[in-house]
Amino acid sequence: MKTRIKEYRARKDMTQADLADAVGVRRETIVFLEKGKYNPSLQLAHDVARVLGTRIDNLFIFEDDFEVVLEE
Image 1 (cartoon, helix red, strand yellow):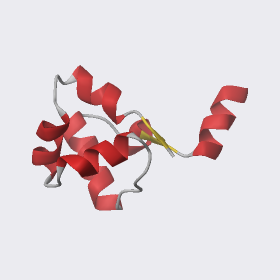
Image 2 (tube, helix red, strand yellow):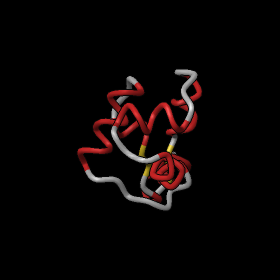
Image 3 (cartoon, one colour):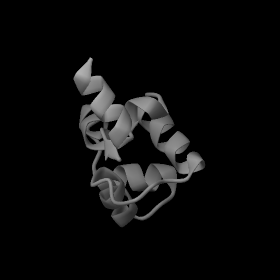
């Protein structure tokens, strides 16, 4: 899974720690999310999207979806 969390977080001028505090997780969780090494629960994905002011599907891109977008 690819994510755009870092991009959206930068737009809000938030650090990883800021985002972690806002959604109630450890900073390391945000690090793993940004690297695509952790699949969040639906609740966490919703919370991250809410804090960053976007929709879940703007932040999280599954590999298959990413390939389809590139082909179109």
